[in-house]
Length: 546
Image 1 (spheres, rainbow, N blue to C red):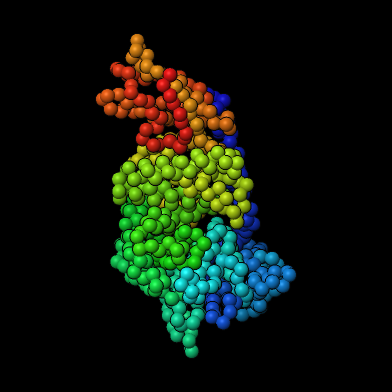
Image 2: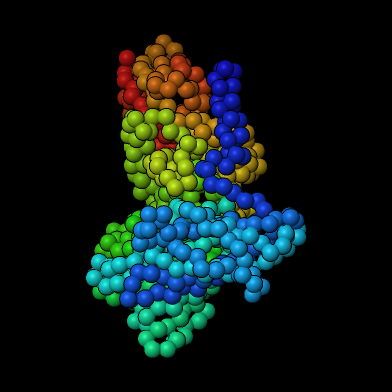
């Protein structure tokens, strides 16, 4: 038993060390802190070229900084048609020297920074984005423009720090032909006609968010302004041709919004807009303006779980954001499990259990593939631009970690931990270690082994066993083995259901070895013995009567 625990603890401490080293590979710069972006964009029907000017406000934590590096994909060296070309960089009306190579724009400052000083820079550029801003015809053959930045695609059309660790407020000032409507993050600040056939639309996002969540949608829309919830406007933006179906599909948004607000904490943004778009994902959780695949509209609410999932992201992923892309389970695992929590609250526990069984089947199937066999939830080998390489782990297995955590600490401590985690890291960044710390504080439990084995180690327990009834001692005898091929032994509570003609009763076993013999009192011979009858453990099992 001591050897098993030592193996798990050693694995966890090693993982914590890697986390401190920012394993997703992005070159962080602690010498700058972006406070606000002001994106000026001019769009046209004549071509896919965009004209951009970004005004970026930066705080310098220390003195002596002499240059700034930002992300922006430049023109291809082979003379390709896509990429951005910077024409000027200025500060205080004076032009600055800059170097734009590959996807990095390095700006030489006119003078070294002072500690805590704030400065603003204006960057002018133009070009045709290869990605990030999706330009072309929608499903109805009409031209449209949609931002689609996850995970590192912001840099294709906007300039800034293309990583979730550096959050900032933002504004979009979009000048486009006046037959379009424009949706973006935050609140609408201005709409102004700008001359023949053009209109400028200004959206302002005052709460800091990560750059992958900063987007615009420019198209012909039918817009529905639904009721507000606690002062938060709820909106639907869909193509006019899908008006009736889209308005019906997205009208369910208030339910998840109310549930998460009451159970987690206040909604973090100024509006909740659900938007039909050309995102390549089923849904993309852009802060306050969620984009859904244009094919998701059915008029039958077949996308209800997707809507619930994306709204959950406004709290987890958007407001509380993973500090490193290898920790994306803190976003996707949360949204996946909170969809099930909403379903449990709204439709009953059976609905949630069915969802968790389905998720468990996906996790166990993935584990038996070559790709999944050695992949933990936090996989430090995955680079930033491939954050969803092990999607089943970060979505479904991540949700199971939260489900098991809930069972481990109990419902009261679980919800207290969730509320405190959100309160403490709202509008900021967090790591798995931060989540663990909060739950240890609210529950009074040591969760090092729990997070070590479920997050930083691959796999799950696979139980094989036989049971019999000892009539002399009036006991059920279960001989149980963990037979997972990794050789790692999981330490966990295991619920066992013993059924007789009086019904099912559940007993608890403490599992901490590869092989164990368990005995439980039983006044009569059982009809059946089940492993995990109430569906609280991520595992596979086969148990037969001896």
